[in-house]
Length: 278
Ligand SMILES: NC(=O)c1ccc[n+]([C@@H]2O[C@H](COP(=O)([O-])OP(=O)(O)OC[C@H]3O[C@@H](n4cnc5c(N)ncnc54)[C@H](OP(=O)(O)O)[C@@H]3O)[C@@H](O)[C@H]2O)c1
Image 1 (cartoon, protein in one colour):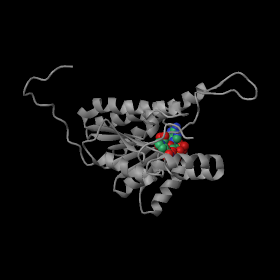
Image 2 (spheres, rainbow, N blue to C red; image 1 turned 180 degrees about the vertical axis):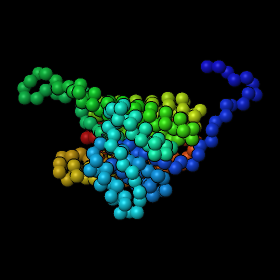
Image 3 (cartoon, rainbow, N blue to C red; image 1 turned 60 degrees about the horizontal axis):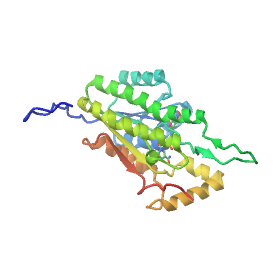
């Protein structure tokens, strides 16, 4: 590291412009959809990208009923070609100032589990399960962040990259692949903030606790044991409830609006997550 000469002025930073265009990758349902609708309601020209065209079109129709406009794009974040194609299309359409990435999937797997049925062999976390989670949650975030940063830097208008991580990034009992992938994204957030500040690009991760969304409610209705587990988990959250998707969307908006935030993680977890639910 070089020490600046006494009295030397810090390098000029480009002031951030008012963001106009956003993309929410993994925005066709759940948290990402809530963020996209909130951004559109705030007047941002918002694009949503995910894999399933039916869900994308369904969200676009729902937004239209609310008087909001969304454009939709198909993308698979595990493919560099697909992600680069998305950002080429966004650039062609006028550029991108805000990129939220909510594409991700939780996986509950213990590293080792006791043998069953009289066997003496301990069961272990599947290697493919590990690779699938890392591919989607960590490599996908790398590919999206890389393409977003290149598009923003080329346009010279600065921007904000907002990866959605999870409160599990500090480690989570029975979710080591997911927690490690999210911790990797926190590390990317800090590294990218260091690299991209000079281009006026900020990087802010948001880390929700459990979100009380449609998928969770459907699973709890279908699987009573899961509902009971979730009740025990909810009771251990200091605020005594899970997050509403709108609370996560509000935090994404804060990450965009507060122009002095970068390289940090915004926890939206009701006060914390237990080490182990019993
Ligand atoms: N829900 C929670 O309690 C919670 C808590 C903490 C953190 N998080 C994190 O928040 C993010 C969103 O979670 P969520 O619960 O809202 O998830 P969700 O309802 O399952 O939505 C996931 C979104 O990502 C898209 N997606 C999945 N795989 C993709 C791929 N390969 N390429 C492109 N898009 C893909 C999905 O659409 P397609 O399947 O059609 O592609 C969908 O739009 C995730 O990163 C998750 O880890 C969630």
